[in-house]
Image (cartoon, rainbow, N blue to C red; front, side, top):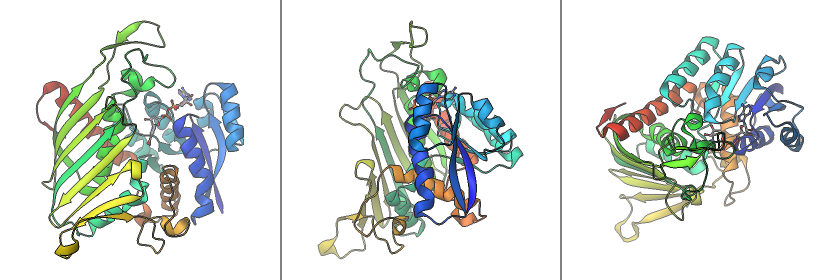
Length: 380
Ligand SMILES: NC(=O)c1ccc[n+]([C@@H]2O[C@H](COP(=O)([O-])OP(=O)(O)OC[C@H]3O[C@@H](n4cnc5c(N)ncnc54)[C@H](O)[C@@H]3O)[C@@H](O)[C@H]2O)c1
């Protein structure tokens, strides 16, 4: 097998999911390339060393610029906060490295556009980790819609609900809480959570043409961990928007970190002329399906356990036996698989979003935020 030497930047939540994916992928999927955990990178040396040891990295670097200079690294994986994405991705692409970047690609379309250009100029393979595409039930939903079973699509509905920022004493900025600092994050729930919903929606139902949104920042000021001062909060705590897809279907999207009781309730529903689909991240192996063509006596919502291993259910032939579950972490393994396969020149395997795809999502996010302040419909 050919070796693909990876340098991962960030040992937080995503640093762990990506490391796990690289370790798993070649054990379960047939690929010409095998990822090698070559270098882990972050600033805190003690914690970095422990992370690198735990996951079996061969070495570590405390400065991402040093990582990019290294000749023994083929691909840079960016699992650091959003304000780091642009500089790292551009430097990596200019150094001829492949780049796998966390979402959102940039903090705004301007940053993302620069990243797309750098990726294009360097001709380097690139991926953005919109991992929900690779959940078997979500991939099955895409296959069902693509097969035409739903007929004309009338409605798309998505939510991503959390409740972890309700406490007004929660500070903004710094480790763990950079998501509340607009300079680090770019935006609030729009770029963090709705970006996922938008990516899935456009992947399944095509481009979004226009949007109208309402956004709210419920807690207007929070102590900033970097300065110790109480500062204005610049992120959107909640966002709901209506959208029109280019194909004429209508959509409603909602996201908040103030929905008491919800931790990561990502759901979507698609209503077509002949059939409907719903999916819920809290029960990620199941796809609910309603088919109007069913015999009237038994017509109703069926709950499909997406675990057939005969090829009907995406990815499941590579794991255990029918009926057994896989989890959240496997979506990253599937993303890594698609990326490795694309290096073999198999166009059909490019089921993952590239920088160029993620730029489209960023443009929708920007139109949503713009509409949130202008209170007008916004073309994307
Ligand atoms: N695909 C998904 O579902 C998903 C889920 C969570 C986060 N994310 C994205 O992943 C990225 C990271 O989020 P997270 O939740 O893992 O954050 P985190 O706070 O858990 O981890 C961030 C990591 O980046 C490191 N870091 C920060 N600044 C750095 C620098 N200058 N140089 C080197 N390392 C640096 C930190 O040390 C930390 O290890 C964000 O872009 C986020 O939007 C995506």
